[in-house]
Image (cartoon, rainbow, N blue to C red):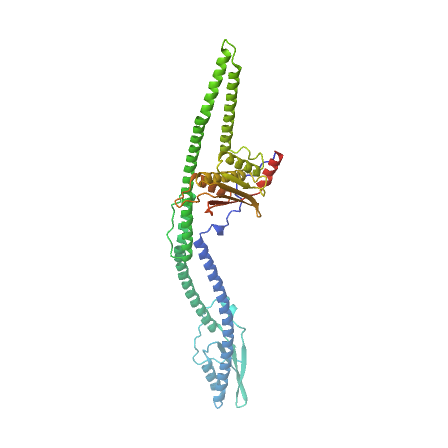
Length: 475
């Protein structure tokens, strides 16, 4: 014997990750920080590439300018003595930016400046930044020739640290400004996200109320258009749930009333119909007993008459019992095919309502569609014909039921009665029909005919048809 799987729909899922457990606001802030860091890295890369190109261009320009300065100085001082020329040249080129010029005499010794200027040896840029940007050092040597005589040499070496320090200062200033802007932006986003996500917290609280079956929860429309739509949909769902609960309450009260009415009708029928029959049976049985106990021989004619009366009363009791059982539960359902049950139903209505004609077409119905579906079809047709006779005063009632492609049962009940009154109110019978059909996912439409009333019912049937069909066939 196999055990059916549990109907619990819960499926094992992996526990949420650390990222999933973070609040939404925190995750959005972290994403913004990640974007800022990525933008900062890209900006640093662009600054480094541009700075390397700019420093190299600057070094080339400085080297060219210094070479021109040295050449011009030599050309202008051709009439001076060699010592004076070297001192003048050393004086003019000291303290230049981006380059270092060393003046050598004819022997290769360095010519000192008359009043040397102090160079700034403290640099701002760190070594790693210098290593990223600094181009390869360049060195040029220019001979110093006066009146055709070589008197020395000017050695020019590029020094990019001053330019790199300027780039570093610019990068630091830009980084500080960007950091301040990013901090301000993060603070603004933190506040804005809090205001934007606050309605979602209200939605969560409202859903908690709905989960606790408190359908009075309503959300105030927020300023955001998208969240306002969510709030409106939430309020609509809560209203629908509230109305559904109220409808269920009314239906439960109607069901209780219907049960009480059915019990009351059954009690009255037992009292009014079965009571006299049982009393008559008791009276006839007592009469037979008296005749049997009499000293004289019993009159056979009277005994036969009492027996016939008892048989007639028993037949009435059997008919009443069969009608009562059929009203409580059609005993033929599940025992004979559904079309035959409906034919028996029409015959019973014809017998009980001799002034109304009942016709039905059930040739295109299957043997059965499941116990619940078959009972719903039977009850809906029964209630529709009862309403046609009781309220419509119909002379002719036509029932048609068939199976449509796509797995749907189509039922139509027409009558030539008075139709739907303008002040028509939905009673227990029609409400019960709608609930039965709606529980199976079908639809029920009540329209005025020409003349009379038309009831149209659609009921989808599922996979249980084959199982019940086999049971009916075996029976």
